[in-house]
Length: 364
Image 1 (cartoon, helix red, strand yellow):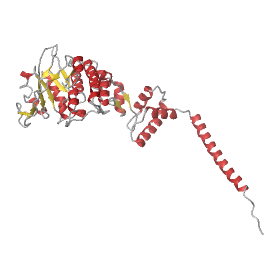
Image 2: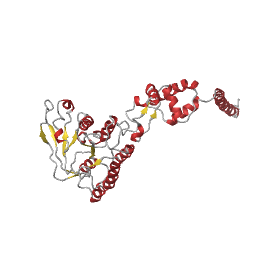
Image 3: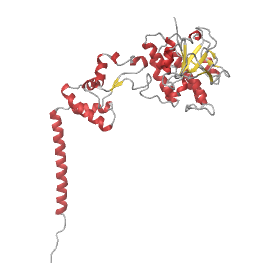
């Protein structure tokens, strides 16, 4: 069976960024702190089925922990070799690198790969024989498309679905590491699985742990980042909430649980009654249908006033205020009015008492 290999180069990117004069964004930890972080990263990604590239300057203990992990050989990078690729008429020249890879993979025993980089603007040429000319090299060619045009994930997926064997990239992709870091591997993986392609990956519910490790390194993942973002399954619009409640597949390309996330209902100015009902049920609140209209009005008013959606605590407080019985509300209002009147009367009495205590004016 044709198997794919998704190679993560995050450790190499970080190692390069920590060298003097590097243009890459530097992690916030020192090289001494990098080693234990790298051990956790390596164990996590291998548990999910990704291959991990280990830079040669990491301690031997890391290499010993993963004897089958690809290792970049020193002195084998030939950067900025410009070669025109087949049928690249208007696309000009593409950058190709050929780093030697000590794969050490027990599955195929292959000792080296050729890494094809760049090709940022190659998407229009995929229907003009671009990949066909490369297929004779598919068993030794490792594709790492750039993301200057925002097409790295699409190029990587097409390469694999057309018969390629291996893609190099990084968890988080260009959003975290820059356009030359290749495609976001988590996006490539989910695209393939959405097309019912067997990737050999597993335990992708641990992807939030990868996002947490990246955050620890100083790389904050956007809450709306595909696959990794915490809020990608949060819905507010009424029609979307109603649709997801009836058939989640209408709006979700993959189940939240498959990537370690949860579906959540957010209430705000775009919410409808369906969203209120689902959110109340999610929080275990009994919301009578007769109260929905009034609750919707106050929810939308508060969301507009604070210019963002409501927190769970705010929503629960509004539900409680709306669900108060009429008599209880009236008593609360009456008590409040009486208290105000009492306070006003006390102030007036105090003023009168002060006036009485003033000494009487003497005449004559």
